[in-house]
Image (cartoon, rainbow, N blue to C red; front, side):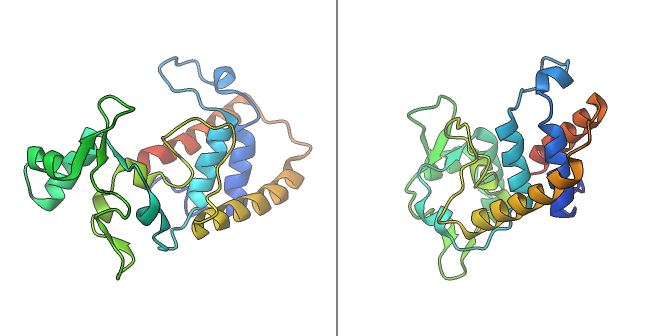
Length: 196
């Protein structure tokens, strides 16, 4: 990642997370156009930073629906060198629950998953919903971080963050951060979403 967060040690990410969650977004951001995130959202982002895909393929084999927005379809069409209209017709159906959202046709397994190579055939242009899996789900709002037991990368990221938080918490126990430190930590974690 270009924002420099992925190459940081887990403890640094944990410290950033602890800072970011000491105050609400409303207490720090005065721009009302910015989305407001909860502490759980920041925990999800921190887990995502630590996530390393193990290429087990479980998400590609069991994911349903795999949601797409128009930008996802445009990227896939460009990658496959076909017109957007053909990509829409060939690969998508309207999502019954969300207007202006499409789903891949014929999922389970995803048609772009190569079982022999254990990899995505369109990885560089995979949809947003695939890029944000497993921690930054788009399907519903939850009040806790969901750990996908079938995803070894999910389990490992949660374990690493948990251990790093214990270590960072001991160091930060007597510290009272100022608003600017909290804002900077929130901004760094939010920037991760722009690089996924």
